[in-house]
Image 1: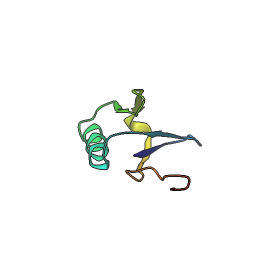
Image 2: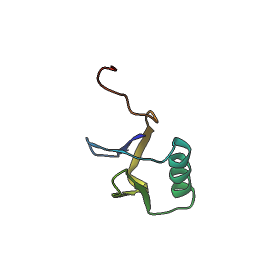
Image 3: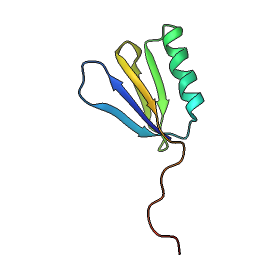
Image 4: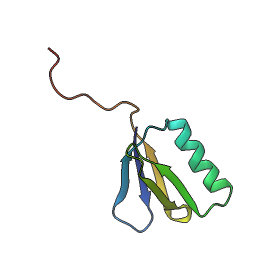
Length: 74
């Protein structure tokens, strides 16, 4: 799934592919905000860990769960 996180006062966004479902990402974001955590922790498909300050999150967008296929089917 494609995940994009917008950061307040920053023109760029964090964008990565994750194997987590939209429900898992939503739960992680909600829990981080509700519990008063300082950081939101998410992993991508390559095993990289993204630490985002909760106070700076502008938005979190979850894209399609399957990537589009490119090319011709023979």
